[in-house]
Structure formats: structure tokens, C-alpha cells
Amino acid sequence: MSTGKEGLDTSPDPAPFPQKFQLNEELDLEGSGISYLPGYPRVHLNDSQQLTAFLDREFWAADLEKISPRLWVMTTQSSANISSLHYQRVKGREIVLTEDPRLHLVWIYNRVFIKPLPKYLLSYRFWTTFLLSEPSPLGIERDKLCKAALGYLRTFYYLIEHESDFDIACRAESRLVPLGVTWEQFCNFSDRFKDRIQDSDVSGRYQFGELRLTRLNFYVKIFLSKFVYERVHAQYGDYFNRFYAPLLFIFGILSLMLNAMQVEMNVEALTKDKWMLFWRICRWFSVITLAVLLFLSFGLVSLLLGMVSDEWIFAIRVLRSKKKEKRKQCTV
Image (cartoon, rainbow, N blue to C red; front, side):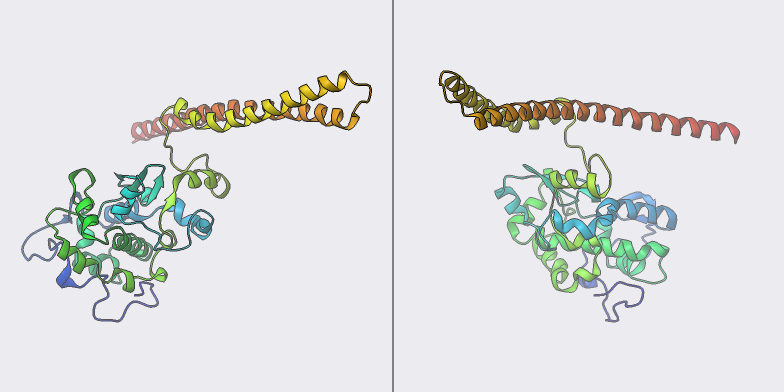
């Protein structure tokens, strides 16, 4: 399946699913008078600017798309690297709903974030009118949004492979599929996703599967010059707690080594023959240990100051932007 401008699918049915297996028919009903996006009454179909901006927020993960050529460093190089919902539970992960495309299939420790299927993506008419047709009301943004939507849609082929997965997806606390859809209907709807939607048809982010948030938070400092990809610790104490165990381990090892060296040096002091090489090693090791401890202490303090200053900078920017808006309103 091709969605590019130079190679649209010429088959009779370019959509990712046949019309007879669509799960939402609101846009097909004659005389229904529906003028909004199914499931989103605030988004009007006749307002192309609003619709384009909304779909961009819904599917385009700008940061991940920007670093998609480097995502192989952070995860398995396969778009099929997605555990089904029942296996997410086997791994001890809680399914957390998110509407942010940046967090779809991102996991950390015992949580995995998944974006629920919106009603309008289940409509054949929506695909053919807005995402696959050219010209489209979405204008030049159509191609990238179509690729992102195709990649997102394909992830549900892997998330819901068994009826037990479907049962999990239909639970009230983790509803990923709209009400009224049956297991058989979903199978018919998603049957062609794996073979029909290829990696060349999707955006760069969806050429990979699950992403580990701890790795994203580390590598965005290098690839995007950002302090963090997504904050998971609301309090400073929670953030610094994760450093305690490794730091205590390092301090314990260094303490044992220094104590052993001190015992050996005390014994050496009682003998006539001095082991000068060992004395020099002990001296330099003690100096290096002090330097490491000072460096770690300085690093933790700098990290705290950086977090506080980052919050202050953000608050000041917001304050300035509000003042500019008020000035504009006053001049109008």
C-alpha cells in the first residue's frame, strides 16, 4: 500500500480495511447532517484548518519523528516489536490510557501508555475523503498525517491478537476500542493491517514498536538537546530516590576498599621493609575517591539547581507570553 503523492495505491480499495468491515458508519448515513468528526463534536469537518491542527496533535509525534533515524539505538529494529495486551499484563505492566501520540507504546517499569482507537479512524469514508484522496481538505499535511495514522492503526494488529486481548481492550478502566464492537468485527476490520500496511507506508516513528521511556529521557539530551522527554516524577524526592541505591552501592564498595588499604598500610608501618609502590597506589586511590565523591555531590546539586531553574524559565516564558497577549488585546 502506498500513500505518497507520486504513488497512490491504484487498487480499487486503497483504504487499510474494506468498506464492508468498517466499524463506524456515521459519515455514511444519508441525511444524518453530521458536520463534526465522529467522537469529537468540537471538531468541525468544514473547518479544514481546525481539522488539520487537531489531527496533527492526535497523530504526529514531532520529537519521535525527528529522531526516528536514531531510534534503533533505543529499541529493537522492528515495527512488530509490540507485546499484545495480555502479554503486557504478563510482564507486570499496567495499561495507562493516553491521548498524547508521543506516549503511544512508550513504557516505563510497570506501566505502558496506549492511545485508544478514535471512532473516526474506524470510518471508511474518513480515510478516503481526508487521508487517501488528493486533493484533500488537509492540504500539504495530508501525506505525513496519513503515514502517522497508518502506523498508529497498524499497532492494534499486534496489541489485540487474541480474544483475551480484546477483552482487556474493552474493559471500562482501559477501554481502547469503542463501545459496541465485537471480537469478530474487530478481526475482520484489522485482518489486512499486517500485510497491507508496510513500513514504507508509515512515518519514521512507527517503523519501530515499543519504546522505553528511561532510554528516551537519556537520549533526548544528546539528540534533541532537551532535559527530559517526559517527566514521570512529580516530586523532587521521587526523582532523586532512584539514585540512592546505586550511590549507596558505590560508596559501600569504595568504603571497603579504603578500609582494606588502611589496614594494610597500618601493618606496613610496623615492618622494616616498606612496600612503596603499594603506598603510592593507596595515596592516589584515596585522592581519586575523594574527587569522585566531590564530583557526584556536585552533579546531584547541579541537577537539582537545573530542575529548579528549568521550571523558573518555563514560568517566566509563560508569564511573558501572557503579557504580550494582553498588550495585543489592548492595542486592538
